[in-house]
Length: 285
Image (cartoon, rainbow, N blue to C red; front, top):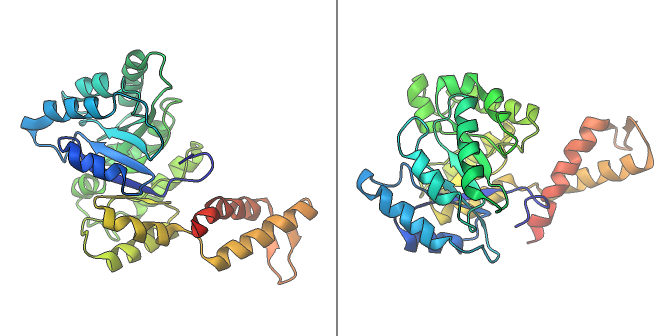
């Protein structure tokens, strides 16, 4: 999918040491497949996982989802070997960076990735904020390097660090993330994973909460979660109709205006309506 044409809504994790699962994830219908070298891989299988990813993505992707790799934590010793291995792969277009606490760590990864990647298109960097310090530095991390393409939360570690439950304890952090991303000119952040893969009703309610906070889309740990996430984050027919009315009216009159139904429209409302329409094509897909 072309991210410039439509925002991504789904990111599906797959463990890097299970190439068969990764292959199935590529066909699951997610916008992005997140191949994990970190939490999903036992310590004694880290090297195998890195080699498996190298074998799978040694060639450029021929259509299908974007492929990002979550390297090992930046506060540990393995991330350099991960970046050296996977940043050189033509089939990988993004690096997900766990446990980012300050912008200097992002710049270290960016420098190594650029060196390794050579003439390949630069890889996007996606820092994960998973600590109180990371949250304090959210905007600095988001603007640490031009290759930063998005930011997100690692909610399990963040909740443990802060000593709060995910809901509603992390709502302030979610809103802080949304503000930092917007201020940095990055896409609206995706919501973190919902850990109960069987509770689709709970997932839908959680997505509704995230959408109200300004998040867009969600990471998933099982393909069965993808449809629920997409439905939760797509605009409704009524929202699409109202957005189309706003954009059409803005073409006729410059500046602020009032619609026949009494709605007041200014530049901010028009921009929001255009974001709604950017997602609208997926409703019919």
